[in-house]
Length: 391
Image (cartoon, rainbow, N blue to C red; front, side, top):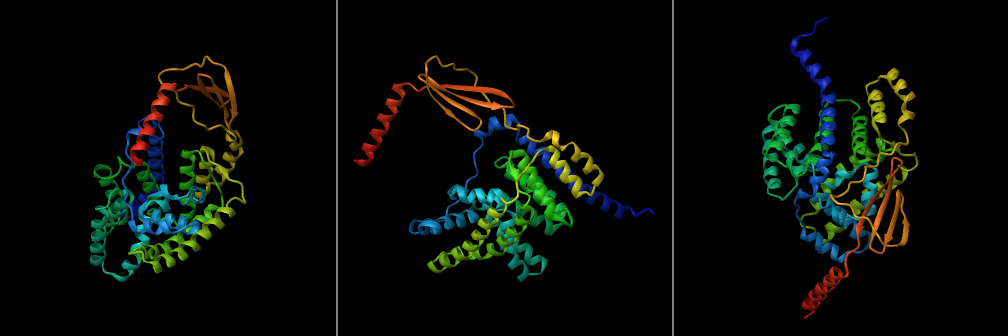
């Protein structure tokens, strides 16, 4: 039976939406991984952020776990993840929750949800988004948050998918794409999954996390397919309270916010331990193909690919070391040798050499030892600066 043209076009667009999102995301992530991008990355400035003085004052008085939670709280609101301790970052990275440290659509939707329920008319919600957008666009940085304001406004003025595409085109032309292209790629991938209309979104989210792990060379725990959605829901409930309690951050607000965030952090810590119960999956092209075949229900093709998956296991995906325009060869005697995970670090009297084993080949990169005159001049400069400050 032939379908009307409008219905046929709608069904074909829905079918092609996710493949298009995945293909474009893979293309963008591949471009960012090229060596040219890696060499030019030092010339790109990181986005500016803003500081909350109230949090700085509160952290000066806090100690121990309260200090760590205040740093986490500030990072969730401002995106300044450099202040967060490494042990907290590692837990969020394992669970695929690194987006918590970057204010984006997840934060905006969670904070605005109670207000959207209060103002139900479309015109009131548009004005609410406009006022929120004016405030957000006055802040330094916050590219992902500004991008999401454009997406929300575009969806209110048009339909969901057209608003999404139009907002991202505007962001490419006039927005934060040049300042934070990786954030743009992640927004494109996960927002595209959300607006795809799929029923099993948690499977697609897991595929998106596997895709990011593939380009970053990381492993993924299979349990985050259940743990990550649960923790995202917990943060979605806690975020409106954390946002309201941060203004103006009096003592009772600090006490209440730390209690809420302490419960959330406890769930994160327990989930991070649970995720280590099952061995992590090594992500490469064949495992990504297997996940796609499972999601699309292609069981026969999945079994065929599964027969050949062993050929791609235990491969060395470590990047080949890069070298400068000149090569230094030490002429002195060996002082000491330090064994590392992937090679050795050899110290000579006139320099040092770093030896790495990549795909069965030993790569050696040597650097000369700094002359005593340079080291002495630096020490004198530091001494003068110290004496000047002391005086």
